[in-house]
Length: 314
Image (cartoon, rainbow, N blue to C red; front, side, top):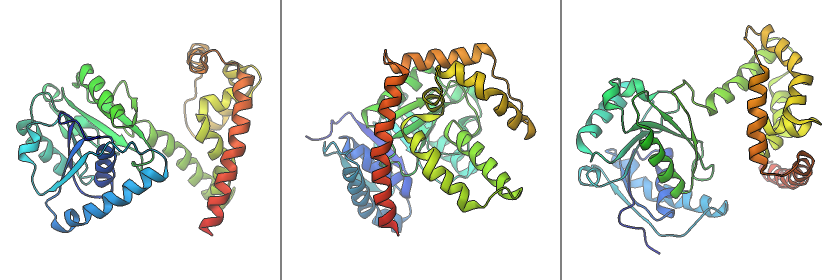
């Protein structure tokens, strides 16, 4: 099956992220124009795409829809007819501002313009609200060819229908979009990751433990559970009575820990109930004990695979 001619994406930047995204969209049947003025990176892109296609197949994510990747130094013609532009350049605000100024002038009004920045919000790249309507951050997870999450963070002036359109396009390419309601530094992933890493550094600095012990706790304890459940479902499945019972039992200790670090910790009854309702919807009629039994079985299978991989590494 060949890619549909109306599915066209321009990827600006043939570094690892750009090449990985090009491979994903091509596998999903899109026509991809991969752009980079650096001839060395552009010449290496074909091999990089092959490597990422192999990773996609290894993960069992390949669809074999046989899209096409065109590697070029300039993409003026493609910009006029694409539905999506992914800017995958360096984390340099001035560079991104220049690129987006050009994109706003050279793309059709229907094209979604996204940056894969992991730190720079769109409101800094395109400061004028009235020019932000079709611009947003599309933050992938490294390596994006196999970790198929895409955080979508709008600017204050981004139109909701464009966010919805971007989510649809990424879903068609095989990603699971996570949509933010408003702009926040670090988006979701890096805010969660930074909270863990900040505490990890503190525990080492305070002499509580050593770095490798913290990695061990994450690898052998938290990591396998979070891979399957995430923090809210993990709390729900670990406590008879679910989210509300967990908040009552562990909330006071977590509050003390947070406030000792200078944080403000407020788990109001309304907030806890909101999370509990979300979990009820997510379980779709399954009971907490049934879900806990599923997790126990799934964790056992995951640990077996993990331990084989760790042996391969050594």
